[in-house]
Amino acid sequence: MARIVQKYGGTSVSDIEKIFNVAKRVANTRARGIQVAVVVSAMGDTTDELLELAGRIAARPPERETALLLSTGELVSAALLSMALREIGCDAAAFSGPQAGVLTDGRYLNARILEFNAGRVKEALESGKVAVVAGFQGADARGDINTLGRGGSDTTAVALAAALDAEVCEIYTDVDGVFTVDPQLVPKARKLQEITYDELLELASLGAKVLHPRAVECGKEHGVVIHVRSSFHEETGTIVKKAASLEKGTVISGIACDKDQVKIAVIGVPDRPGIAARIFSALAKEGINVDLIVQSIRRNGENDILFTVKEEDCGKALFVLEPLVAEIGAKELLHKHDVAKISIVGAGMIHSSGVAAGMFEALAGAGINIEIISTSEIKISCLIAADRLQEAAEAIHNYFGLEKGVSPGKSQ
Ligand code: ASP
Ligand code: MG
Image 1 (cartoon, rainbow, N blue to C red):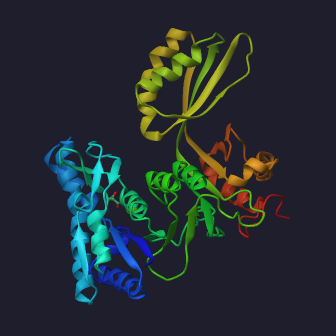
Image 2 (cartoon, rainbow, N blue to C red; image 1 turned 45 degrees about the vertical axis):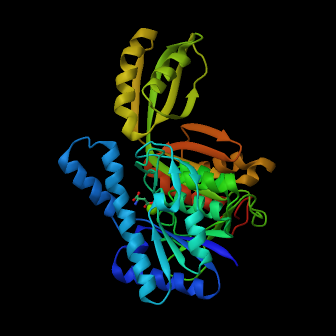
């Protein structure tokens, strides 16, 4: 019998009426003779509210207890959904993460799943029940509750699909799927039919928040087909898999926009071996992630080193760099907040030339200056002025014909 996993996010189970809607959808699938295991998130903003409660007790609440507290959100929705299913005549059983067999590594608030021993879930499915599993949680070897990091229910769902050898893991959410670009930024954005794990990982890490990155990694590792779709209608969403049968002629799949960037410049650095190493290891030691980096060409025995960090790391980065700049004999330390990173992602880039040129041409056509460029096999990123982000996204979207799904080449 076919077997699938369905995951419903917080917005899909935010009140009793919505829980009944989810129950109906699950029951319909079950009635078609398909075994269904369901993974749920906490209702609405429950996780934030629980965190807020803890914050009212202590500035830094203990992690072990915070994990225990947060796990209750998902327990509530799993129990309620199971009750709703039974109420409409569909036999069901709810499981906490540990009951479902999620063994985690002991990091209380950001745990990884080590094993998913889904025996009890399988048993429930085989006896004709729908299994409802609380997402976002597991227990470590001592039996302590761990949570999987914000958005971690996606990972529970994909890991369960792998453990059950399910045909597909359907992620029901409040958007229709994965889009070529944020539709709020570029209304012409198009929903993608398919995308590869690697592309989605790039888009996710670039700031397009669709699926928990670890869920995508887990899907990639176990070859789980993931279907991201809306919980509000029946239309198909976006299929995430290994090699997307690349939509005809498509080189670029999507554009990611990230405003959460600060540019830092160390000006007039003596051109000596070891200087870059000192700067970047000092930052790394503080756990600061450096993103785009450029070093200007040498003039008069000096150059400039520019890079970006996340907004939240800016203060710490400047604090670390100020004494260092004096020590290495650099002239000045500057930083600039109003920058944004725009990136294009596409597995098809590996086999195409001229993609970078196309992106630069699109930006030039819109009169947008590029401050830093960085590339990888399937991604090209440019740092630009934050207030030109929307124009840049539109220009690139048009240039590559993303609206129609035909690229590369000019849109004219
Ligand atoms: N409830 C958790 C969160 O809000 C996990 C999830 O929604 O996936 O992050
Ligand atoms: Mg979520």
